Length: 225
Image (cartoon, rainbow, N blue to C red; front, side):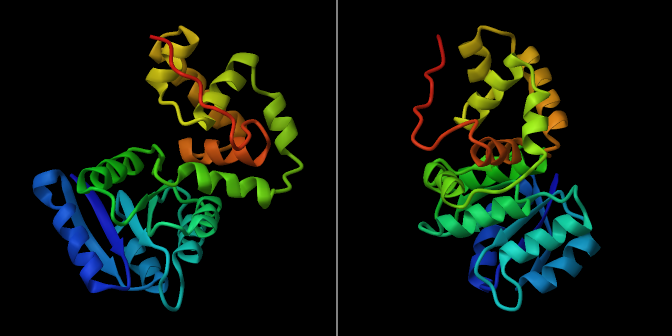
């Protein structure tokens, strides 16, 4: 059972999420908050496996709440829910430490999969807006003087894997593309996370776009079959 805290200033939105994230589907909503400030106390109390966070809220918005949650507990897992067209805000949420984002009007099954992925330590980037959101990183570059050193620690194979992660491929697709076993890819991914000091797949994608490993508009490779 995956424990979840819901953070949204609209009761109707939280009620809809409660319907989607019910115990018969493997979820247990252990807390709710109507703004980011209240979310900090609620998450500290409930210590959920995942936090489902709205962006636009009074007192403290989802970006600031995500940043504060991760500062208090680096292991916190946040899935941001938003509406179409908030690309810049979503980019800021990823930089704040969110593990992924999903559109509010996504199918229930997609929201369930997203929460499961985030709770399991993976990232979830909604394909409907992923490309546009990640392109924001090239219009607002981040200065990280240590990035070149960390990238330099990657082997050529690890750099290949990072590029494919940045293009949105799963481990299984990367394995087929590079003609390697999926277990080998998982090992590479773990080493990439360690060397780059990133916590999950979403953070690795952000790093790849922030530091020019993957460029906006670059076509995704087709996995070999």
